[in-house]
Every structure is written in structure tokens, then in C-alpha cells.
Image (cartoon, rainbow, N blue to C red):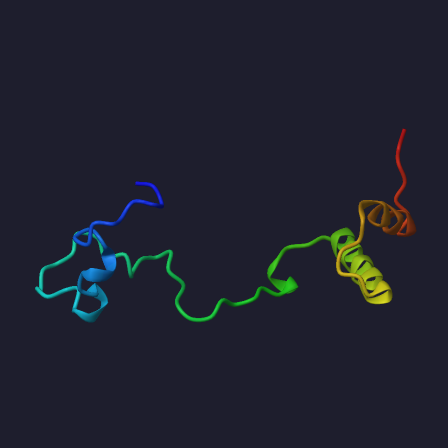
Length: 97
């Protein structure tokens, strides 16, 4: 159907009754799959994990603290990879040949 052709009023959605005005489930029949429940549905607010819930070595914690110091000193949320390399070098890491 092109833009210039007249529409058939029997096929016009606006001429039909609004299905939002009626109850969708008129009969009390069980549904095949209840999509409103399940173990993947979140119950309540998500809890944020703290750093204490992970097993981290001293090196990992030192690196995380160095990154956080960089972020607070520069005011930037995401360091570039070259900045991450400088942070690592500042911690004493160097490339082994």
C-alpha cells in the first residue's frame, strides 16, 4: 500500500475497540508458563559487593589502591592504558626480558 492510496476502514486499528480497556484474563485458566516468577527475577534491591567479599592478594589490593589514588588526584574516572602502565611502573613493576 502506498501513501496515496486510501485505507480500508475495516483494517484501521483506530476504528477497533481499545483492548486496554478490557480485562485481558477473563477466565481463570492456568497459564502454561508464568513469566512473572523465576529464580532469575530479582527480589528487592541489588546489593553491592564490598571489596572484602573477594579473595585478593596484597599485589591486587596495592594496584587497586594506586588506581583509586590516580582517579582521585586527577578527577578522571577512567585512566588510559598508558596511564595504567605508568601507575604500574610507579609501583615498581618492570618488563622482564
